Length: 364
Image 1 (spheres, one colour):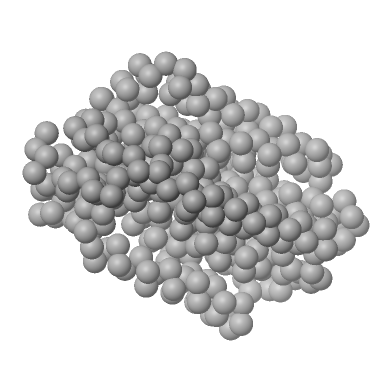
Image 2 (image 1 turned 135 degrees about the vertical axis):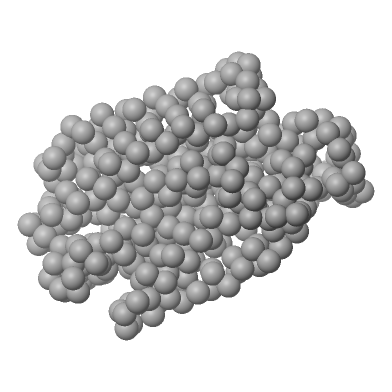
C-alpha cells in the first residue's frame, strides 16, 4: 500500500485507551441511528402516504403522513444532536482517514450542510403550507444518506484515494455503494413504519378512533414487513460484494465478529417471522411491542458489525501506525456526566410524549 497520501498521526496522541473510544463510537452511533431512522424513513414514508392520501385530511394515509412528520419535529433535532458524538469519536480513532475522505469529497461534504438545513426547514414549511415541501425534505435527507455512505467508503479505502481525487463521483461505482445505501434506507423505513404501527395500536386499544388507527397500524405493519423482506435480501447481497479481504476477516475473526453477524441475521429472520404472524396488529399488541424491541436490538447488533467491517477495511493501513495514548480522564468524566444527563433528558421527553400525547390526528 502507498502510504504517501496518509497523514501522520496526531502528535497529541489519543486522549484515552482505544478500546474505550471504540465502545463509545458504537454506542453513540446506535443512539444516532434510532433518530436518523425516524427522520429518513419517516420522511420518505410520509411522502408516499401523503401522495396516496391525495390531500384528503380524513384519509388514513394523510393522517399517517401527518403523524410521521409530527414525530420528525423531535426526531430531526435529536438526529442532529446525537450525530455529534459518533462523528467526534470517528475523528479521534480514524482522523488520518476520515479527514482525508471528507477533503477528497470536499464540495459534496459541504453540500450536506446545505441539504440538512433545507430538509429541516422544508419539514416545517410542509406543516405550515403543504405544497412541495415534503418532497424537498424527503429528497434532502435521502441525499444526506448518500453523502454519508460515500464518505464512509472513501475514508476506509486509502489505497484508492488517488482514484477518488481524480474523480470523486467514482465512489458511486463501488460495488458496495448501492447495496449499503439501500440497507440503511430500508432499515430506516422499517423502523419508522413499526413506530407508526406501534403508536396506532396504542391509540386503537385506548378506544381513540379505532378504525382509523386500525387502518394506520395495518399500513405501517405492511411497510415494515416488505421493507424487512427486501432488507434481508439486500443484506446477503452486501455481504457478497464486500472486498474479499474484509469478508475473510469477518469469517476468520471467530466469535467477536461472527457472533454479532450471526445474531443480526437470526434477528432479521426472526423479525420476518414476527411480522408475518399478524395481519391485524391491533389484535396483537404484545407482538407489536416485541417486534419493535427486536428491531431496536437488531439495529444495535448491526451497529457493532458495521464498525467491525470498518476496522477490517482499514486494518492494512492502521497496522502501520502505533498511536500514543495520553489519557485525559477529567475531560472524559465531564463527557460521561453530560452524556448521562442528555440521555436522561431524552428519556424524559420520550416518556412524556408516550404517556401524555397531544391531541389531534397529527399529534406525535
